[in-house]
View (spheres, rainbow, N blue to C red):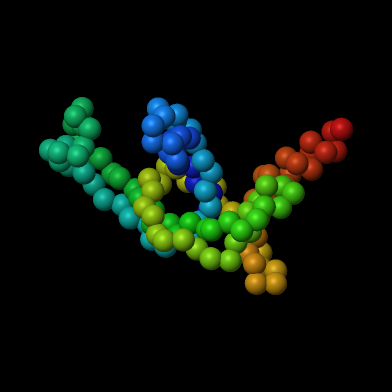
Length: 120
């Protein structure tokens, strides 16, 4: 699947101010977790007057080795599991294996590229 997380663009430069941005990631869902936070929970928003359902996904992100002409990554291995908020998930993608390497297939990206090329 494809998901987007907020990152600090200056994370490699500790002496510089943080520059927030978004980064697209791809990974495989390992578990989906949902639970309710009661209004009295110290971690719940302060204006919460009823239970709030929190949905999380445990994802094994891909380790991209290269990118094709459509910008889709190829990979051989998955990284360590990370837990993300389900609303960060953008779409479900497919994958194709060729000579031991998996390539992510996202139809929207291919269609957009084809349409842009056909229009010129």
